[in-house]
Length: 131
Image (cartoon, rainbow, N blue to C red):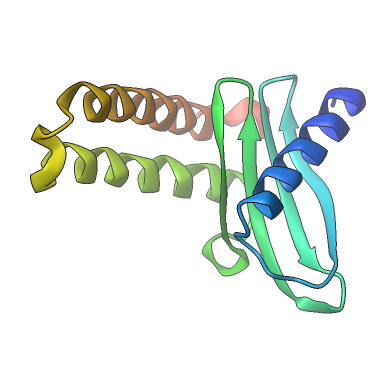
C-alpha cells in the first residue's frame, strides 16, 4: 500500500464528505481499510464520540468520492461490489428520468462517466488476486 498516496487521498475524501455535510458528527476518525496502488481507496469514517456510528468511504483517481452506511458491506470487496451496483442503478436513473431530455448532453455525459466507474469497480471486485 502506498502510504503517502493513501493518507493524502483519505484526507481529501474525508474533507470532501465533510464539506458536503454528508455526515454530521461532532468529531470524526477516519482510517484506510484497503487501497489499490494510487487508484482506489476504501476507508471507514467514524463518529469519534460514538463508535457505533460509521460509514464506508470510497474514492480515488478517476473515481468519484462516495459514502455508504457501514451496514451495507462487511468487507472492502463487498463494498466495491455495492458501489458498482449502486452506480449502475444511478446510470439507469439518469437515462430514464423525465427531465433527462432537457439537458441531454450533460445527463448523457454524467451517465457515461458513472457507467465507466461502475464497470471499473465491478471488474475490480471480480479480480480475486488483489483481495
